[in-house]
Image 1 (tube, one colour):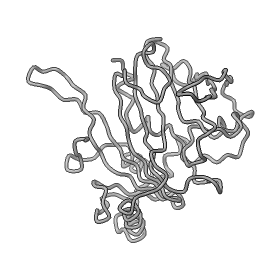
Image 2 (cartoon, helix red, strand yellow; image 1 turned 90 degrees about the vertical axis):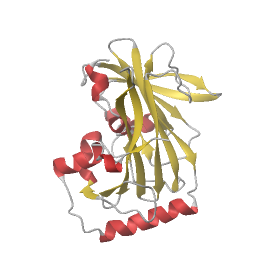
Image 3 (cartoon, helix red, strand yellow; image 1 turned 120 degrees about the vertical axis):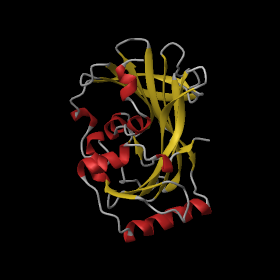
Image 4 (spheres, helix red, strand yellow; image 1 turned 180 degrees about the vertical axis):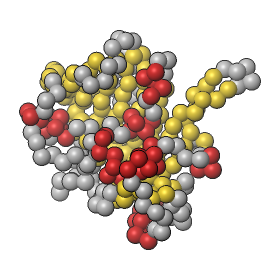
Length: 273
């Protein structure tokens, strides 16, 4: 595995999703999304809703309610068997609560309305990942080279596609966005300009092709449910109140980046179920 795969983390893949708090009136106001990330062989890794043949794969949850989101973060942890065979195990890191109006964030170790936050930081410092990018420009004004590809059919649906050629990263060749015009408007956007380019259809899948011509990686989301359970709503209510009364110092800059990206101490880790 080359240095690119070591560089790529679950959280960094996740952060390629641009999340905007500017929602249309008919958009989903609450629900649960599943974020799937993985790397697989280019010949046996098709653009479908089920990616099974992967070098690694993980599914993370993002709950959303109005301008509030909760991100379940995981990471890969190398372990050894008695025969000293190296394995990669998915472990839980933390829950990240973010208020998109204030951009204040807190980390939690458990998903419970009685849980206590253990860090407090300003999320807006992660603009490097183009979070909260407003739709204030047309896709035609993009400097990156884009090409609209012919439509394809996935799971009996007509899917639109756009190819983006990437020059900024030496190990990447190009990226393909997939858009489904039947998806309800929601807070998840890979790139709002791509959605504009495709007439408002929602991009739900992004594939990256590498210059080694052997593997590709994917990030995709699907809306698992459009309504929160009473328990999930209680968590949002409690964590929103916690954000208003928290006494922990507010971290910014590099400290805020670390709080978001770095997996926490062992006391906050639980093995993924």
